[in-house]
Image 1 (tube, rainbow, N blue to C red):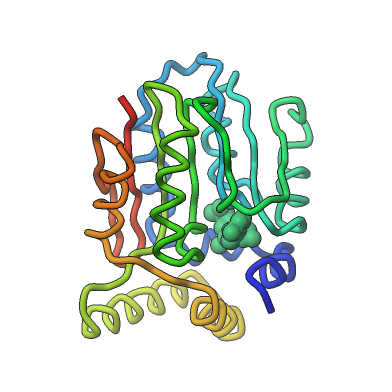
Image 2: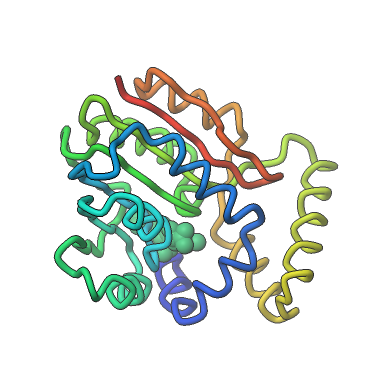
Length: 226
Ligand SMILES: C[S@@+](CC[C@H](N)C(=O)[O-])C[C@H]1O[C@@H](n2cnc3c(N)ncnc32)[C@H](O)[C@@H]1O
């Protein structure tokens, strides 16, 4: 099964699952909004890579009422959930069933966001994508990538898994949900180390790069194009 088929299959229950499965959910998105250097009324152009059901876009859309969004994802069923989510404000949202490895925009966006998607790419593809994102942004522009991080040692990897399992069980996840998530992670995830992800963003040309929030193997990467 491809990553596209896997997410088409899990689209229906995805939103409820991600709220349970993402440790630090509220803090991550709150940190994302707080760092954005835009006025609430700014007519931003936003690109959401691997947008899925539109989670990150929905958070940004609530804060920036005049922002317009392009949601890009390979999985049509995930985008179908996003369409329903944004039905009441359809004019602000555009959808593209496409591979994020093929973005070709030049200086079109004020903000590029991505959550839990880029770790599906091979490392060389992540590096290439960061360069494409840099090119797609205006000046000034911001790239926010909420994504997974490879643990630096096997011992910490075990520790991160233990913390995650404790978290999802406390949130009420069923063993079936947990096992399906683990199977997806093993099949489709290519997590990169923290230092590499920061270095690739710098190499892509971003002037200011940091990890704003980290919760074990989840992090919010921030990169600013001056
Ligand atoms: C874990 S989901 C995250 C969805 C959403 N961003 C969120 O945070 O809830 C990963 C998404 O990335 C998409 N995806 C993975 N590889 C992709 C690629 N190469 N091009 C476009 N979308 C991709 C999948 O189809 C899926 O919808």
